[in-house]
Structures are given as C-alpha cells and as structure tokens.
Length: 172
Image (cartoon, rainbow, N blue to C red; front, side, top):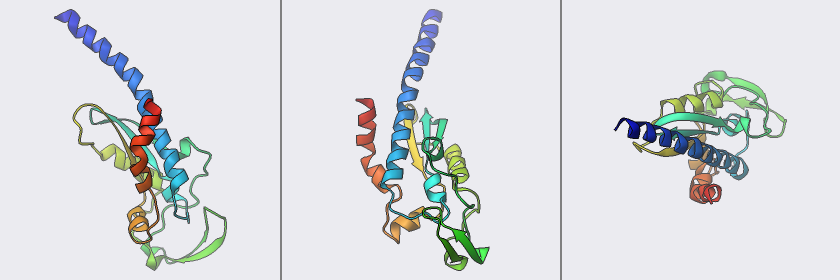
C-alpha cells in the first residue's frame, strides 16, 4: 500500500499542475468580460479596478487575480469615498473631468482601495464545494449592489450570466 500512496500523491500533483492554469485562465477571462460589459461610470476607479477573481481548490484560496494585473488600467485616483468626507473635489477616473461630490449622498465604505477589500474578502471566503475547483469573482466596493439594484447598471451580473459560456470556451 505504501507504493500506491506515493502513486496517488504524484497523480494528484499532476492533476493540480494541469488544472490550475485552466482555472486561472477562466478567472482572467471572467475579469476581462466584466471590464468589457460594465455599464457604470467610474468616479474614483475603485469599482472597476477592484474586480478580483479567487481560484480555490478544495475550499482553499490558491490564487487571487485582480483586473489591474491583467489589463492596462491605471490604479484608482483615490481610496473609496464615504459619507463623512464632506464636499470633495474629484478628478473622475473615467474621463478626467473635475467634479464636486457631496459625500452625504454616498454609501458608507471602509475608505480603502477597492482591490484591497476584494482581496481580503476572497481570503475570508469559502466556497460551498468540499472537493474540487472554484472561481469566485467579486468587487471590493460596498456600493456595487446599489449600482446594480438602484441604478440598474451592470457591474458583475452580466458576467455571472455568461460565466458558463466563458468557462466552456477556455476548456474546449
């Protein structure tokens, strides 16, 4: 039996070495789809640049991939704005226009960069599968749900709806 244990360990490593790049490729394709299909504007750039994918094996995070690392996007101009910031002059991330923002109308945030929040979320998250591979896509902005629900603009929902086709195109 000792020999079979070594065989299974070696076989497991071969499978891991072959599958991990496939799932990382799926993650990158999902991130690029999210970037191309987003409908919202970008005031500080935190929602867009926080698009992050986590690749999990057996419920353990093995890789995080942020959109900034697989695109030519610039880093966000500011950390996330929050309710208690008062009136702020902001150079928009998406078009460079200067605008004054009254923070009283904003959603409360952790005042960090979105990509930091997204990575911390993925580190703390555990997919439901006990064995196998998973790819989880997230944003690091507290207002992403607000953008989709109240403003009716796509953030990640469209990518989720297309995810099986995106994954199939990588696998096939």
